[in-house]
Length: 253
Ligand code: OAD
Image (cartoon, rainbow, N blue to C red):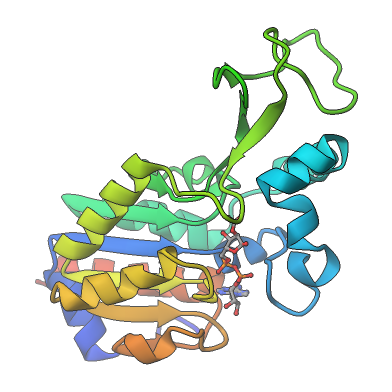
């Protein structure tokens, strides 16, 4: 795809050019081109690992060392990669609107590293940790070399600040995400399979609130039938083209 051959409908471009409030929902697919594995694609994390052994509170209590090691491994992968053109395009899009909210299911922090500021992290952030006993935030001391799952100074176990299966989403993130989806004039759902709720409800919330809703994903997701338009392309290719077209539209307006 190049900037010349538009795959975006006039309706989408009009909605994005005319909106003062825009919201975006991203999933693991937006980080795929950075080299971060997704969950449900062929070869994805959930085809190689069992979520019930690694991503639930019971799993953590049963085997904290294994769960901590798995998150350490994922942190190392994430630290070794960089944001891709899709992340940077979304950061640029934010500067075009007075009200722009980037709602992400990703815990990798790549949106912020690309420069996005109005980020709502629905599933937490893998770089943050806290004590399950006293709830204090935790980070390793600079001189500390970690081997194995750490303990808090109170003796409690330290866990990553990510949402596990069976857990509630952070209340403030839910409030901000639902408010942004409800008030926006255009909504993009990008790189998510739409398999995990409540996040997968957001495109419908936006549509019911009157927004024009489009999906960007190389394969139609399980919520594709709920959006106005599907752009079957990778986010690292489609988003820079979309932002360039929007910039031109705004310059000529
Ligand atoms: P999934 O792995 O379920 O879905 C990834 C989606 O990205 C798929 O629909 C792919 O087609 C799409 N995709 C792959 N490459 C892409 C690319 N280059 N550009 C755009 N899209 C691409 O990931 P999520 O939907 O994010 O939860 O999964 C939701 C939640 O399930 C995750 O947040 C995680 C997981 O269990 C928690 O950790 C709480």
